[in-house]
Length: 254
Image (tube, rainbow, N blue to C red; front, top):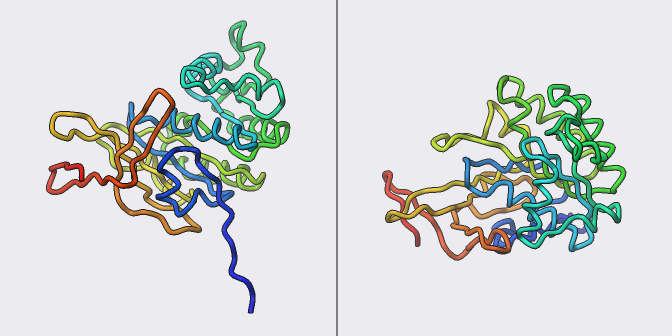
């Protein structure tokens, strides 16, 4: 008899989340992190990367919607100072935001001159991953790549997946949706990824409550319920022992 195949997992570093994933994200999975504005997607991704660095897993953050200087500043506000890891060659930020314009942008090592050129973006991402030996990657946000042309969303994600999985990384792709939209940020994108984690905000008794649900995760059993989470001064905390229920338009926390 052959031994049972053991799934290698990546610990998210987000308190409470791995309990919903039967121990963590299966290694090499490409996960869509989808949600509306203010739900905490960017913080989620940055926390995942920094937690990996603390555990010895190198990482790359692809910044499509924010200046790299601001990214470092925002991470430091949570106590996640990535500069020592950059200096040690263990972490890199790919600047896909500035196009190389500005004095501070000229000091960035990995710069995408045109985000409309997906081939260039992929080459710069591959270079950064190889240089730092990255095991974790976050792209924030992939929606920027196909916002004006949603019909190509799935093909862009498939190209990203080939690169990210092929280089052995476990990646989060941040996907923007509108406040009222319950989709995932583009036609067919849910079929192009290995997992989907959806972040939302709902009103419960006059107060906005953030919640998370794992829509799918290949290679593992996972919790199927919606759980509340909070953004603290040290990052996101998920409460796996609490459930947010929506019945006939009414939202309750149990």
